[in-house]
Length: 316
Image (cartoon, rainbow, N blue to C red):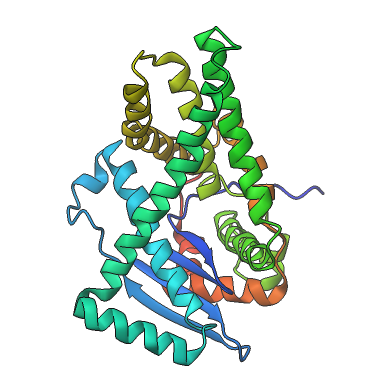
C-alpha cells in the first residue's frame, strides 16, 4: 500500500549558516550552535530586539520587509562574528576586543555591527545595482533603444549575481558554510513535513526551502530588472538615485512574496518560488551527519518541535 505524503506546515522558525555552525531564530529568541575545534557542540541562546523598537511597525505589510531585512543583516553579522571567534587566535581576539572597548566602551559590539552592515549594503548596491547600470551604459552608442539597454542591464545584473555565488562557492570555507546551510534547511523541512527531528529523518529531507534568503535575494534582483525596464528618467544622476532609492521598495515586495511562499503551497506560489529554489542548489550543499547534529542542537534550543508535531494544524 502506497504511503500517503504528509502536507507541510509552517513552523515560523528560520535560520542561517555561520562558520562551522547554524543559527536558528524563533520569534525573538535565537540560538547559535557551533562545532568547536575540539569537536563538541557549543550552544548559546539569546534574545534579539529589533532595531526598530516598535512591535507595531514589524507587523505592517511592506514596512516590515525593510525592518526584517535590516534585522537579518544585523543578526547575521553578529552571529557570524560570534562563530568566527571560536576559530580566531585567542591573542588576536583579545587585542581586537581591547581596542574596540577602549574606543567605543559598552557600545563596541553595536558600533561594529552597524559599520559592517553599512559596508555590506554599500558593497551589494555597488556590485549588483550600480555596476550593471554603468556596464550597460557603455553600449549606449551602439544600442539606441532604451528598452534594449534596460534589458541588457537586467541580464548583466542576473549574470553578475549568479557568477558571484558560483565564484564564492569555490572557496573551501564557503563550501562548508553552504553545507551547514543545507543542514539548516533540512532541519526545518524535516519538522515542517511532520517528521521527528532525528539525524536519519533530517538526512532524507530536502535542502531547498521557499523561505530561504537566497530566494529573497533572487526576487530582489528579478524585481529590480522588471522595475528598471519600465521606470525611465533622462538625467543620469537621477537614474542612479532612483535605483538606490527603490531598493527598500524592492526589498519590501520581495519579503512579502517570500512570506506568502512560506505559508502557501498552491501552483502559482510553486511556480513563483521555482527560480529561487533552483538557485539554492548553488548556495546549499549536502551536509554530513556531524553538521546535521549541529542543526538539530540549534533547533532544540529555541523550538519545541515535539509540541509542534503533536498540536500543529496549519497546513501549507
